View 1: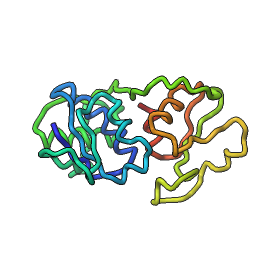
View 2: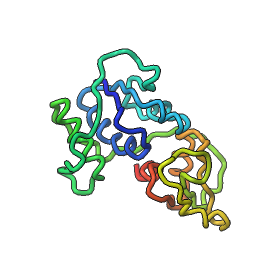
View 3: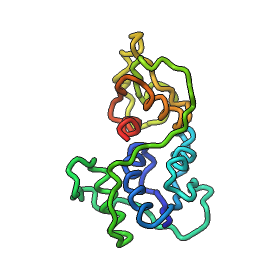
View 4: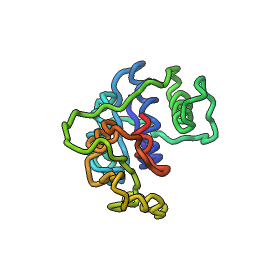
Length: 193
């Protein structure tokens, strides 16, 4: 299957659709995906998606892999019906949208977990890692609250560096011994998966 994800360039939306794509992949095989070029602000975004072993190809919309792609847009943002009440609402909406668009009956892979390489990075696994999208380069122009900035002076916390490749940040989040701390951002969904 071939999809153009032109509805969003939000990291959280992409993370919430990955269990849906994994379920679709299990039914139909690898997926070709075009994403908005603006997602390039997340370092290594395409490589991160390709590493999940769901996709045959991933490309930006300014240089797409040729083909006939289905445009993905949530038509009914209120459609959260699901056979799993613990599934995030955004994941339910994507599942219902793709089932409606493709006519396929398939299940979300609710056990989906992100894959990442073992970078063997030496870091203090006993520090709390904080994900605050406003603590670093501009990756979110919607709001600028710095709600977690007060943690920067506490030696028990370290801030995720958004200039890192997403696979590296995923590794740091997943390999830490402490719970990940974040405001309502897409990187929090990375920690959840």
